[in-house]
Length: 405
Image (cartoon, helix red, strand yellow):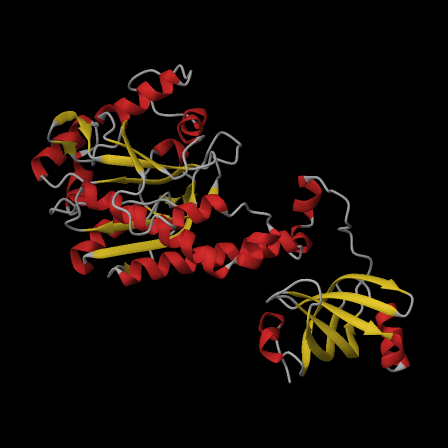
């Protein structure tokens, strides 16, 4: 019976065949322990010399790390680790014998690992990271589809800036002038919601960042979402529900991967437990956040954007993400709707993650009054020809823009 490692729990006591690669090997006298992977997981295979043909034992001695193999054997529960399994191997075929593998057990520097990225991907931690990321993407899709959003594929090559001209990657587009790598799909989604009501995208984003830090990536994947007739409070509630849904899904589907990554689960479990709470994440106005930062020793000035250190200070002791809402209009984009209680503020938020994760989501209610939006565009010094293109989004489209990277 052909099986995968991830489905061995359904075949205890049965003989199965697995195709995969040798991840690690050790031997002791008449026993060889072969750690195998097949893409779905890892399992320890045991070859006991007295119980197998001489050719099988010779193959077990000969096989090298990362060799591709086909093995057959009986599935058994692991005697010491509940919930895990092992394979008592009776047949072993080497499909391709691998040469010496350059990534040993010793620590390697980032330059060496990136030079050998295609091999580094085979490590347990990289395997786990890719699978957790995949589950997070699944959770995002499931969340938005369950709430009536439509997935829209937005262009990678665009004719204009979305997040500021200073971080644009510029390209020549045949003989038709210049185009840019997309900074965000939000403008396309804002046009689309006049048709479908709610829309989201998920794809690569490009920023010609001058800084080289883990928070200033030139390429990353981002999710944008837009919805008509959604106001500020509902916007934040959607964001809370999204984060909680992604965390819950990761906990439910990625137990093995999170264990490999040695991730402390308590903070994630706390966030997941907030599912049915009203306003589960703390809400701070920008003004209150500045006051709190001053009390924590920050020298940030009123009217300034928060830096990485400021975001970390606010969430150091927080068990859940924190909303910072109602920012000064002067430091936010022109399309954000003004707070009716204070026109110098806008109805927006940044959602700051725990443990120094920084900004998880940036969201805002959009300006839905045409005259106000047009005046804001002119105040920005935008050319007249851009006004008509942007104003199609100003038909009572209160929108959510979410960035997850």
